[in-house]
Image: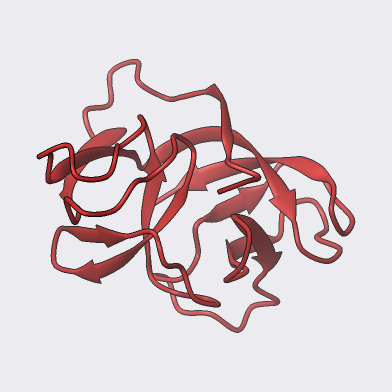
Length: 134
């Protein structure tokens, strides 16, 4: 995959919910920084659809068929992400459904679909700073 989110820094000081383990399929490979959607309770999928309920961002690589079915996901922190369309500063964002990109929610999404907020305004196909807050 391409355009993975890159961690700038997390909010791990004193907060235990920053990274959490989720169940993933053994047969698939997931790159570090991949946006993952919630497929079932405590189960994450790398096949993200537009405005899907989000599980988090992969904290490490998962190799296909390596026997592992648990993957740590970031739930909070600051990440460089690729924008799909123009997103103003402070706008809530959700998954664009393609290429590990985020899109502005325009206030139309439920809380489960919102990944976080833009800390820097961005235009189409630029890398911007997002505050992940799941």
